[in-house]
Length: 90
Length: 398
View 1: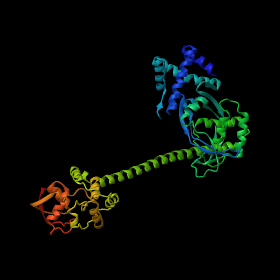
View 2 (view 1 turned 135 degrees about the vertical axis):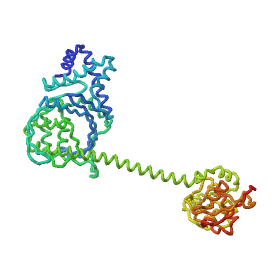
View 3 (view 1 turned 120 degrees about the horizontal axis):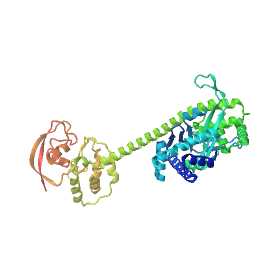
View 4 (view 1 turned 30 degrees about the vertical axis):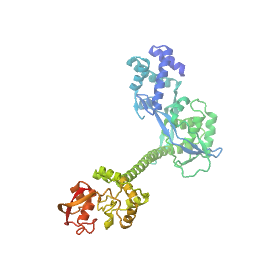
């Protein structure tokens, strides 16, 4: 299901216009993004948690070129499904 | 930072932004996630613009070894929910670290904290396979590379915090895509990954804790050292903080008008000396005595004494040679005239002439008069034995 389908389905369920729902969706996502940028964790009951994790830097060797590369540390967004969801799909 | 948010927080933010009712916002957010769940069930794939892609990934059952017991067991085939953020989102989240780039290392020292991961040839093979086959948008080439980097085929443990589910998802992607990959690799990667996780967790937390605590300890030590130095300097230059007779000192300074060579070095020499008993020569007394016998550990010159000392360089020289006691604060023996006995006093244990002077005159600086008046009794002003009876002279300003 791509974005369009998702938005239309959501608008149908809620009774809003597609434009409204997409607007609401966008603001919801931007709020979430903002919180994640600040380093906070978002837990949605029954769905899962979105967390920002730090990956430390490491040295790897490119097997093709045989060069030693230093990969810098980075922050990544991690999603962990809740147990309910996991069980549902098992 | 490090706050835990839940649906209610999101609802509140949304309601505020759009000026809608709490209930409406709540039902929107709940419906949103509910729909993702249902769509995922139906289509196994949900893409949300500006966010990322949720996918259901089927994992085949595989053999594995229980780390603790060492027994082989079978991980059943199951379905995982994976989420891959969009590149835009990834960059936004990585903003604090955005200026980093991966660089080529040229023979840098091996004393790096990070262990070197070597990608073996099997990995290279896997990389190729993945590169060829990767059809999904989520698992792009970057994901594949990340996947290979994070799965170490070697038995060496690696400093990779590989807890995140995308990482877990990726090896499974590898497994599903490249079924020709030897089961051995998968097997070794799974336990290796698990031990990695444990090791890296402990190592990370340990090194983090270590790092944080060593820095804190170091800072603490630095601060303590600085405080001690500052304290001793203040102590040296302001012994009268204890006396609270600084006004007296300023009087002394104004009276001085002879100029003298700078005796900074002298002053420092004196200040550096620890209080020791020493004989005071009588020649010291007529001039402004710039040294005080100190049995206590007050051995420091005031700023005023510096100036006094500067003005009395010739005397200072003599004094310096004779004495090992540091320059004291003001001590007077010139401006007042002895006109008789004020009282007699028995020196108590642990008492010094300065204390006696303080007691009778309200200022430690008048001890030279006591010495002069009792010159027959007091042989060594630095060391007046307990029980000595001294006459306290009556002083009148000249």
